[in-house]
Structure formats: C-alpha cells, structure tokens
Image 1 (cartoon, rainbow, N blue to C red):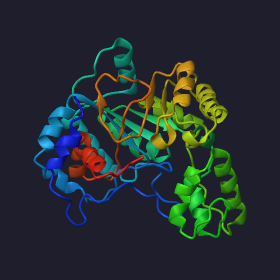
Image 2 (tube, rainbow, N blue to C red):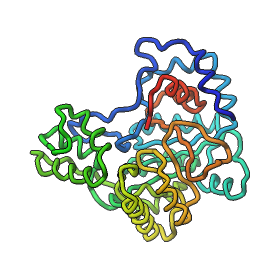
Image 3 (tube, rainbow, N blue to C red):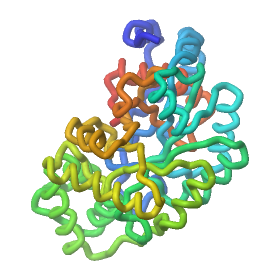
Length: 349
C-alpha cells in the first residue's frame, strides 16, 4: 500500500480541545518507580482517550482497507492492564491475522508476502509483566509474540536505568552534565549525551542522591525459556539499552555482540531478531547484525510496513499500550492515528 497519509489526513477536522493532543508519552518525573517500562525514548500512545474521535473520521474506512495490505507490528512495553490487553487480543483475532516472528522470517527468506491483515505482537525491554500478565493472555488465545530483552538485567533486581535516573533526580541526585531544575528534562538531557557521559552522569546521580531507588525483579534465564516455550520468541535489545546513535562504533558492536552471546548461552541457540533501543535505525548496528546472521530488525517509528518487508533489518512498528482504548487501538491498527500524529508534527520516538 503506498503511503498516502500525508494528503488524506488533511481532510480530517481540526483537533478538538483535549482531543488528539496527547502527543508522545513523556516518562514522568518519578516519585517512585513507574509502572510502565518503556525505554527513555518510548513513545507509546497514552492510555487516555484523547484521540478516540479519530475512530469516527470519514477516512478511517479507507485507512482500514489499505492497512489490510500492510504488516502491523505492535510494540508494547510492560502490560499494566491484563484485562484490556486480553480485549485487544480478542479484537486482533476478529480483525486481523496474528503471525509469529518465525512467519515473518519465512516470508522474508522465501520472498512471499504475509497474509493480508497480518499482525505481529512484540514487547520491548521485557519486564516481568510479559511473563506474568502477557503470556497467560497470549496462551489462552493461541497467539504468538516476540520479546526483546536487555541482557545485563536478566537474573537481576536492577531497575531500568531511565527509571533509576528519574527517581534519583527526584531525591537530590545531581550531575555536572545535567544542569536543570526540572526533573522532567533530565531524561532528554541524559539521552542526548554521548554514551560515556550518560553512564558517568548516572553514576554521579547515584552518589549524590539521598535515597536509593526500589529494586525491580527482572526476568531470569529460565523465564526466557518459559516464554519461548509459550510461543514468545526472544530477541536482542542490547546489553544495557543505550541510545546507539550516541555511542561510538566499538560500543555499538559490544552492546549487540555481548547480548547476542548471553542470549545464545541461555537459549541454546542464537537470537535472529533485534529491536533497536530507542527505536531508531543505526547503520553501524545493522552492519553488526548482518555479520551475526540476524534476519529481522525492528524500529519504533509508529508506522505500518509492507507485508513483505523490503528492508528486513528496518521493519516499522506501531507503538501501543496495553491500556489503549478499543477505539484508539483501531485507529492505530489502521494507520490513521500514526498518520494524524505525523501530520501534527508529533514524534513518537
């Protein structure tokens, strides 16, 4: 399906007060560790129903019909609402064709497009809710998925670094490179630093804060096997979830290969799929993935992709939350909500 969103969306009515104005999800200034687990640039649409009115836009049927000829890869983070997530899965079974990571790999290898209305479910970061909340709902409905894990957190009780940084900033943490009185600006500043400076600044926050963040139980190696046995394929999300664009070439290679070797050891086989931390493509990362024999690489660009991916290491994904309403979920699946957000100039990554 050709991308026609930029012209079609101009026919939409102007945004109402409080509607469609949600923008990208901004990770809160943390008083305690937040429930959501998306990375520092995660832009999953908010659970609020501010964009529900798009469901009734005159162009929604057109977008839905064209989306039938595209591949929808849904990118979740933690599952905070199992009941809502289950309802989303039920909707997918009625409206779409859930496919596995292996099915996408076969389509690429055989140069054969996936069926119309194909949808692949993925999880980034893979906190324990993927095991405790998502897996039972997926298993109950026989739906496959894929989870991309941060290898250095496996088997630990360490919080995600972006949660930790926000907590430390709220509890007196200071760093020389992060001169701001607004904790909400801390993560964007950390994210913009070269990776050595990010790590050094995070350590300064740890030393200067007057409270330590709560611990967070992460998945263990045996949990990865349980997920795989439940038809949730395991993929590489680097060792420590840096922003690859702020890393030098040696760090990019180390982050990917380190996670690759750890996952190979735990799973007994090498992973073949990768999700770029922070969602953006990095050509140096793609070169490493190609060397290691990876077949698929996933972005977080909030777009639909072709049923036969033309660039297997640059596959588009749609950002979605387990608490997203049914109406908003429909407009994300159709591509209308992502197109509207791009038209309004709202980035999600």
